[in-house]
Length: 487
Image (cartoon, rainbow, N blue to C red; front, side, top):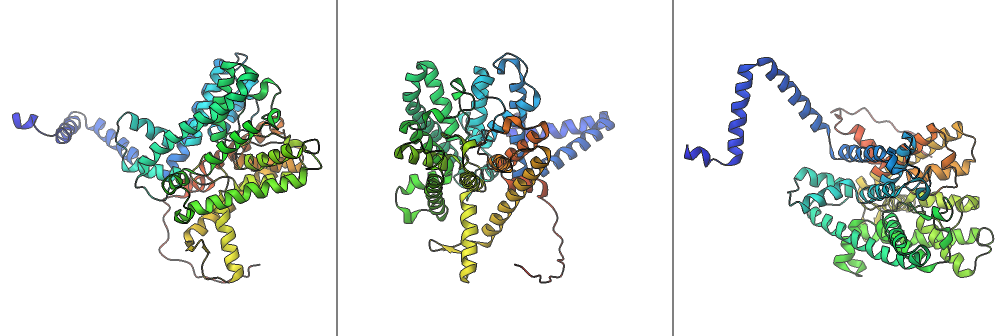
């Protein structure tokens, strides 16, 4: 007896489980057989839930929960039940940190509704697995190998080792940066809105900017106006731009910068590419927008305000969604530049969306290497692996197919300017949130298409595709190869 009670809990649990199984099978064989079938089905279901599918299902679950809460009368400003499609569109836009809205955030939602949106933005920006693991760490729970694997897939890290420590750094760093941003923005909002509302606006816009969400509360002055009223305000512009860039460069880059400070040569190749492409896109995009709009939309602005507005438009087009100039009044050239920036997006493992800066860089390096006839695709003294080139081509192809397919569908469904439709679909797939104002004019079917694009853009087009194709059996015998003419 004493030996049995000294038995470890794991063995005791197995002993009681074995005894219970034998007892049930002897007492009622039919119940036992049904139980075995259910257990087999459960094991089969769990075996199919790979990391990519877990990410896809997890984001879908958060969106649906957010939709149900936003439909409640307590969530709307007028105390009425919000229709399902509007709630689904808003919940998807918030969780996928996009910023496209069919209801003005300030005028359409109550304080409770705005808090729910903020929670969805924060969870969507950091990733539900990051938030879940951080909560588990606070509760002193162990993080298993499976959870670490899903985290690695969710955060796009290079290795699984040290990923839990990275989650701790990310979460603490996020709250710290968002707190500093909220303080800086409150300095400008408090004199304008009062203490309580000014602080709340500072917190909301700081989180929205860091998570590259693009949601704003400026509808108090004018609906759907975003930050147009602050186009010449250096404090608001610079603070929001820094939050967007810091949130969009990726958590792995954070870790590298923290460890190696300003020693560029010691950075990982990933960090070097991200920083180089990010700076190039911001400055190049700002220059192009300035040249295209200096005699048009920015004609009445001073030189300083024009440069500031150009920089802001370039930064926010990389998946943030705020605007200090009227997007609908931009020239066709500026809209095209914006579409290109939205398609490229931010960096992997960040709060940003899009095809990603590294994908863009890999494709350019690969093309340039082939044009020169170089042996391998080389940059910063390193050679890119063929697997990275393959992944980059898949991401670009899928994103382009989704965006172009959606644009054709919207053109067939509605009589809207083609350039505005292109801006809308690339904004959705890139989880940007910039719009020329046609979002509210979309029909139900068109809204569903935009919802699907935002969802695919957030979880990643490659993740979305793999969630359907993983674990497919590969034939052991390949078909014979035959050459075709290319170009």
